[in-house]
Image (cartoon, rainbow, N blue to C red):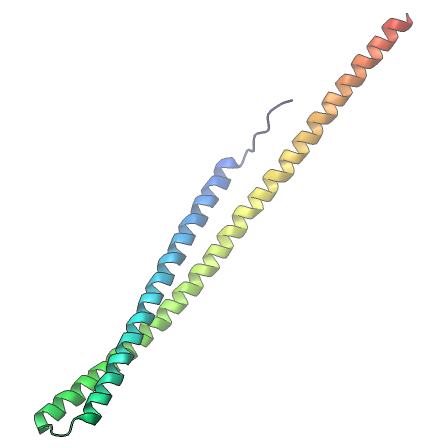
Length: 146
């Protein structure tokens, strides 16, 4: 039986490599997004703590009060900036998912083609073998009959 060789194997391997790179890109995008979420949570916690500290402070000078409000304002701005970054990162994650889906679909298409061609090759090889066996049986039968 002849060995099956898929002519597009190099293309299939290249597409598999592209799919793996897309998986890595998605993984990095998700990690960045998660880090931003953690940062936002930490900033929100710091803001809540600042508000509690400010509400519990009884004797603050005007300068201390101004500093506390500036710090609170800075935390709010940092949260707003981080939320904007988070939206960008969510879009990036979505784009990476779409890219990965397309690359996986392209690789699966070649995998399916390879499987079909391998099955077809095996079927043809079995037909050749059966035909060869039939010829041998016919020749033996004719030689015995003569």
